[in-house]
Length: 161
Image (spheres, rainbow, N blue to C red):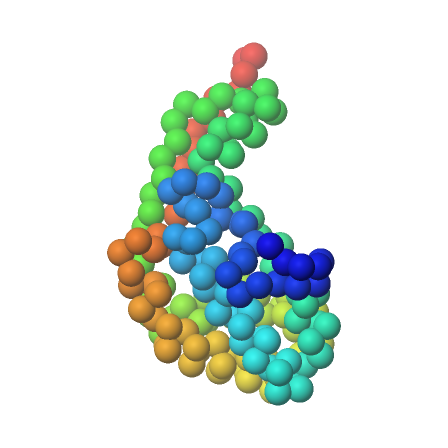
């Protein structure tokens, strides 16, 4: 537990990966976001970007668990779940050191540029640091207990039809 609202301990993590089978600790995407965040911290430590900008940057992502989705569908009441399957996919793309950084860049570059006011040079620096850190930590994504991207396939039936 942090001592005040501004403290973040190294062993504390935001919970954005649901519970059970797709928990934060086992979620490869969550670990990848941590690496990207650590690159921003490195740039702030060098003075390339203000620490305040790093502290206020947030990826507006949430990865619900199947249980959370079931609860939300029931609470909504408009649909019933006919079938739900979790497809863990392959970890191959997560360890591809050329392709995966391009995926992350395509997904988040505009948001990062907007928040930090980065031009081309700064965005290049960030993603070069990211590629290096990802390469240094690729074993994280190869571990047997780390999940690859999980895709939920859900068949809903509209109620009262």
